[in-house]
Amino acid sequence: MKKAILGSLAVLPLVVGGVFTNASSASAAALVGEFSISPGINSSLPLVTNSTLFSNKINFSPNPGGVFVTNQTGTFSSFDAATIKSIPAPLIPSNGGTKDSPLLSNFLDLGQLSGPFANNATTNDGQNTFSLLSIGSYSIEEMFDNNGNFTGTSISLGVSGFFTSADGQMSNGAGTVTFQSTLRKPGVLTAMASSNGLNASFSGVFISASVPEPTTLVGLGLVAGSLVMSRRGKKNQAE
Image (cartoon, rainbow, N blue to C red; front, side, top):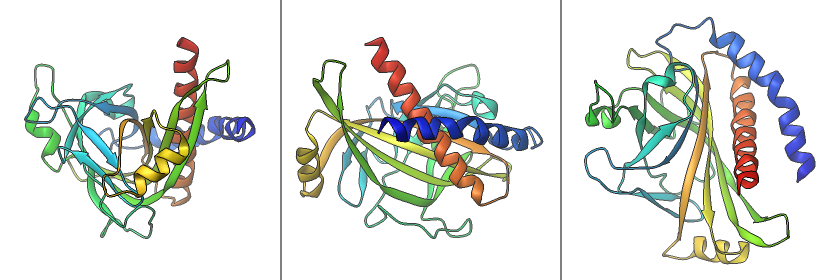
C-alpha cells in the first residue's frame, strides 16, 4: 500500500503542472482549481447531511444534501457551500456517460451560504455544477494507528466528469468521496449488501482543469486520490 501511495504522489507534480499550465490560459469564468467538501446544513433547512452506502448506490439524506466547501483554490474560491445528490442504483460502478448525456447531472451544485452576497438558493439552482461521466468501484481499506490499533474503515469512491460554470463554460473534473465507518471490513461489506445499508460519515476532494483532452480525466483522478491520501496522513499525524 505504501508503494502505491508513493507512486501516486510521484506522479502528482507532473499531473498538477500539466493541469494548471493549461488552466492558467482558461477564461476566469471557467471553474478551475480544487476544493474539499464535508457534511453541512441543507440549502434551506438546518439539517446535517447523512450518507447511507449500498453495494451499487449511495443515498444522501436529505437529497440533495448540503455540504460545506473548504480549501478552495482558483475560481472555486467564491463558493463556500454546495448540495450533493444521491447516486442511484445501479450506477456504482459505471462509465460511458457523455457531456450531452451524463450518468448523473448536477451531482454537486456550488453556491454561497455566507458573506455579503449570500443566497441559499444558489446551492440548488442548476448553475456552477459538477456532473458525472464515470463512477468507479468502492475501495475499502482498514486503518490502523502507529501502535497497530484499528481506527476505522475507509470506503473511497472515485468519480470523474465535468464542471459547468454559470455562463456555460465546461471544464474537466474528478474527485474522491471518502466514507468512514467504525466497523471492520467484513462488517462494512455485510452492511452495504443489506437492505438497510451502511451509515457512514463522509468528506471529499474535487479538482478541475479547463482542458479538452480526455486523458486529463485520468490525471485529475490521480491528483484527487493523492490529495485525499495526503490530507489523511496530515490528519493522522495531528492525532
